[in-house]
Amino acid sequence: MDCALDNGVVGIEAQCGGACLCSTCHCYVEAPWFGRLPSMIDDEQALLQYLDDCRSNSRLSCQVFITEALDGIVVHIPERQWNQ
Ligand code: FES
Image (cartoon, rainbow, N blue to C red; front, side):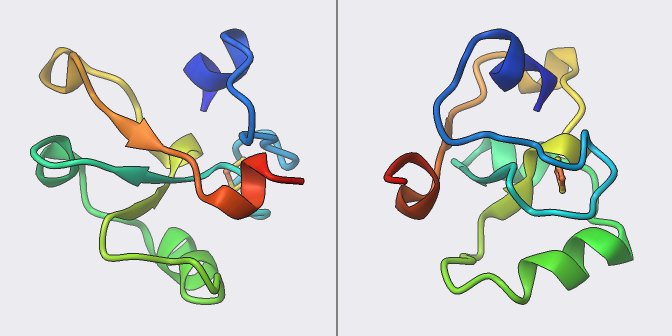
C-alpha cells in the first residue's frame, strides 16, 4: 500500500491508512507471488469476504509487506477502484 501511494497508483486510496478497516487498498496478486505472501489475519479475511469483486488471489495491500522474496511482484487493481 505504501509503495502504491508513494508512486501515485490509481485505485489505491487506503482511506484507513493501513489499519485494515476500509478495503480501499484491495488488489489482486499474481502467481507466483501470491503464494509467497504471509497468511491473512482474520480482519483481512473478514473485510475481503464482503467485496463483490473478491477473488482467490485478493489481498489488502496494506497487509502485504514488501520483502526481497516479493521482488518483481505483479498486482492488479480491481476495476471498480480505478474506474470511479
Ligand atoms: S488501507 Fe484500509 S484496509 Fe488497507
